[in-house]
Amino acid sequence: MATAIPKTMRAAQLMKYKTKYEIHSIPVPTVGPNDLLVKIGAAGFCHTDYQVWEGVYGSKCPIVPSHEPAGTVVAVGHMAQAKWKVGQRVGVSLFKHACHACLGCKTTSDVRFCEKKEMAGLQHDGGMAEYIIGDADTSVSIPDEVPFEQAAPLMCAGATVWAGIEAADAKPSQAVGVLGIGGLGSLAVQFYKARGHPVVAIDNRHEGRALAQEPDLKADLVIDMGDSNAVEKIKAWAGQLGLAAIVVCTDSVSAIEWSTKVLRPHGVCVPLGLPVEALKFNAFDVIFQELSIKGSLVASISQVEDMMKTVAKHGVRSHVSTIPLEKVPDLPGMYLDPHLTGRLVMKISS
Image (cartoon, rainbow, N blue to C red; front, side):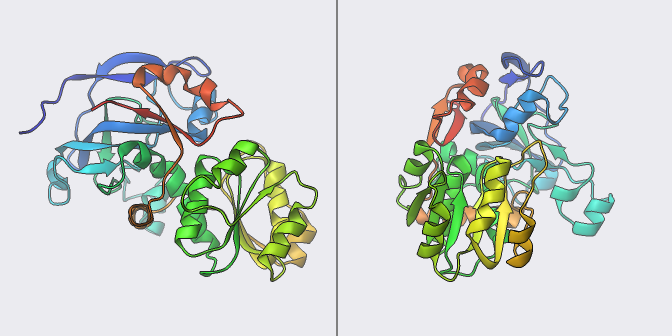
């Protein structure tokens, strides 16, 4: 029997930058012809959400935060009914509703580069609510083995590091590094291990270093970036003059610059953090070692589907702290806790 869909829902809204989210009753969004209406099971909070809260993206208020939603399909637009059914478990992508007409679409056929795309939680309402609209073309199935509170961080944190790993393109068995072991870095370590790589995890925080050894897919080596011999230790462990690749999961400009020092010749650095100020790199490191610095946004939909299969097969898990919708106003303060471990996730009771 189909679940009755209410006309209104509870949602957290940012009414003004740098002020507490407010819980309001707002209309349940309308399903378009190629849309899914998703009843939220969980939604994550990440660095980009904090930047939206600060006003970095110039988002129009009020706005519902979170671009990491996971839940259950409760209604399907008529154009999407061949692919999606009510009751399916689904993750909703940040990027929605490509126009298929702009130069970005014509050049790439990829919603990530559409000039008119919608972005959940950044420019349009996100997942910190009881319902959200998903684009049938950019939503992905969630394996039954993955609970919603684990699936939610995969839609941004997971998709971001999976894309970074793909961009780094290290060959199986090559030694690689992950710098910054929080919500993204922990997943990056596990993904690399699942793909057959020796991995060094690097963090200057005790919490980060402990997190790298928490899951079953542990880092092979854990290094304090503050250790004066860190570079030498990593290169000695990796052999062949250093790491084949490093994925950097912090927005610290100095840490990103430091990361190139542990790479072998022709090594690849993929910085995933988004500092407000410009990145910088040591010209002698980059040029004399012929290093590559590669930009990476988030995974494509096909890459996210591959990631989900890996998560289900290898038991990849995030360290999550869950809160109810009523506690969402506390999220920016919780996020700034220097001892925060893993991901903050809003979970709605079934």
